[in-house]
Image (cartoon, rainbow, N blue to C red; front, side):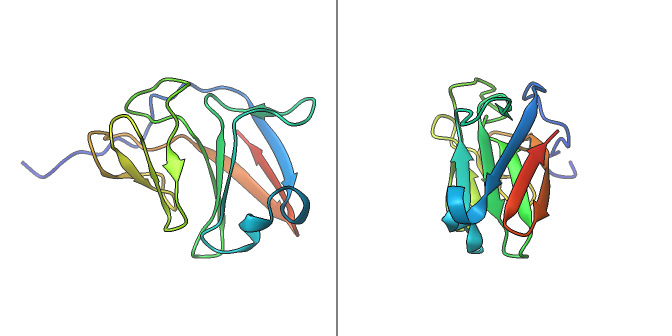
Length: 130
């Protein structure tokens, strides 16, 4: 055997994502590397937050990453990964842990990555789409 195979596509359903925020107004913690923000309900008309909600992470490489909060192993809308400022997100049900810089699993039963979304940054404004 050549080791555990990690899948590059996730089973998390594809659903509409269109979310905008201003770091200074909506999520000041995102101004810091390691900072993260989650959205589990739309806050404005026309916003879509994916299948189980959004995780936006300010990476240690100074880039922003966005994922669906749904654990790809559990694949249930109400089972959301819990992020931390050390750059990981953990599923409270199956125990899978994910690197939020890549979305790939680092521990636990999941061989699937988190569903990643496109993240656009313009000054302090962030837009997440799919």
